[in-house]
Amino acid sequence: SEITGDRKYLEPIPRAAAWLKRSLLSDGQVARYYELKTNRPLYMQRHGDKYELTYDDSDLPDHYGWKSPSKLSELGRDYALARVGKSPSTANSQIDLGNKATKIVDALDSNGRWVDRFDGTRLVGQAKLSIGQEYLSSQTFSDNLTTLSHYVLSGSRE
Image 1: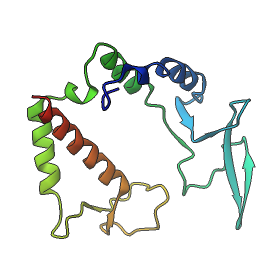
Image 2: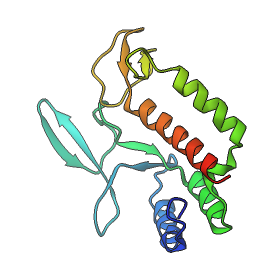
Image 3: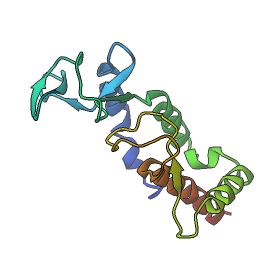
């Protein structure tokens, strides 16, 4: 509803949040895949070049994000704001968003890219990198575009 202004898009959120809450794993995360009808988490285990579908998460390949944080609290916060007609993106002040936008634009390299430097933190689905090696991150790109979009949107409301 933030983009369209149509509150009908808020209607399914409580049901989706209830499903998400029921689907939480014991460690508070959610699985990437769930079996239809049973809602059991699904994983794959690798044996050489072959993968096998399993419910067992004890020996997962480490090159894929099989589990992730639920973000249930963020969903609840954003939903509560939307119900009272406030945009989650306007929860940040215009000045704060402006400062973030300036830093993001300033971080572009001479080719117009956001280049990250590998610091040893595990990267899902990423080739092996050496410490200090530069790479392009889809997460950085997505995060930066989201922040810039919020900044542009917040300025257009004034």
